[in-house]
Image 1 (tube, one colour):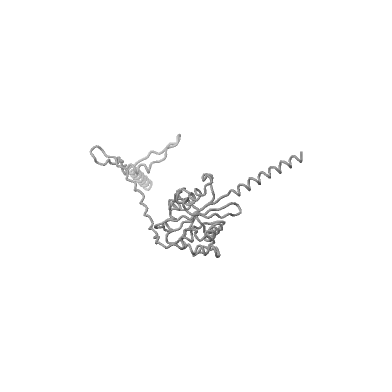
Image 2 (cartoon, helix red, strand yellow; image 1 turned 90 degrees about the horizontal axis):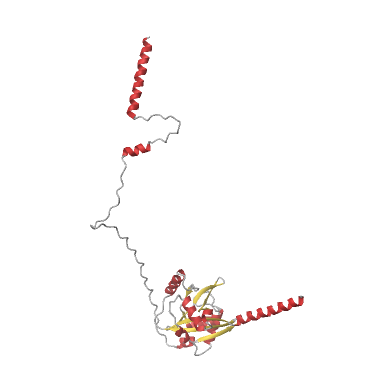
Length: 286
């Protein structure tokens, strides 16, 4: 029986290793790097293992992408920019790309060129905050930067630090930049060697003020006059004083003194004093 257990254990281990190696080899990541007419690119910064790194807008494939890198790039770019550019599938499909093969799969980077004006960094960040607050697509990027394409290539070939910062660039992103820069007709070399055209930053969109709730309509009579509130009858001062001076309810079996008014009380006191005076006079006369 022992050898049967050993054979089953070896077969299950082989199947597990085969499935794990197959899933690792089939892993694919995809991203988008936006380029503009003035020769700049738009990388984004995010935290990886508590370290801020700069890269393109991308990620791994999901089952909903059905193995299409273009769908993955479209979904990741729109999520991480919170739909600021409204990227379409045709724009991604028509963009040049480079593929970097690494240990656990491959990473494809698409260079999507956008003409005309470009949004401000604050607009992209605001859109990301609104999307994250409304529980819309997940926004991973915390910062963005417009970087000159030549400076980006020099940084990838040099120390790997994002120009203008002290933060490193992501490894697959550096590899894709280097691979595209080695091609004389690559997307970045074409952008660097082409004549520069202005790409002004458009102003922040003005958000509409929230609607003001209208006051509740008042109840009116048929005559059109405002209905008055019901009149509350005020208690007299005598009633209020009487309520404050009210004694507690007498206990059963205990005789209570009869309440008398102040005038009656003074009159009785005066009678007692006069009576005591008469008695004292009689005693002195004796």
